[in-house]
Image 1 (cartoon, rainbow, N blue to C red):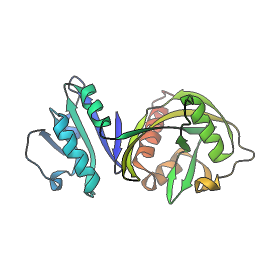
Image 2: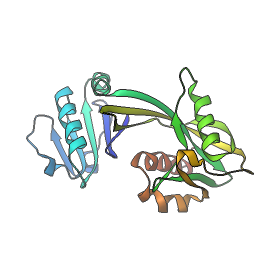
Image 3: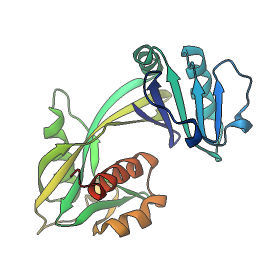
Length: 226
């Protein structure tokens, strides 16, 4: 599960999954004493339980943890931990696409941030159909779904509610971009085809969840998995 709280990745893993401690800057147990100042770089917390989830989510929401790159929690009962995390939020479902045309990727520029086209699903709308609709509406193009990509979750506050948005991502092929233009009513200023190198250059100006999806695809491309 890939959760982004205040644009910081919170990664939940089961104890049986392989974890390489040398990949982390700080490794500790859930019952170790720590403060927000200790959360620097990539942090791994073992034996995570609901209490540590609650504490960390509060810290990530109220503190500007500028030095924290990622937070990984390892637990025996991962599913129980995920359910506990979800219970803290209202769940909103969305879908979007990483769109390809030959060797280029489609990026949109919205509210000062580079992004992939995406949006909330309509009531009872099928996920793939919603993803296609959102991409086609936001960019005025035609696409077809090729494959599923990892899902992302990110939190935000709206009208006093804590929201956790689940976004289902799909790899898509553009079949017609002859009338491509940004959807102004969604505050999209620009729609642009980029090479993989250009995408990597703008990722520092993108949401962390978008960078996660982009790097996942580019790594798969490099390894020949797509």
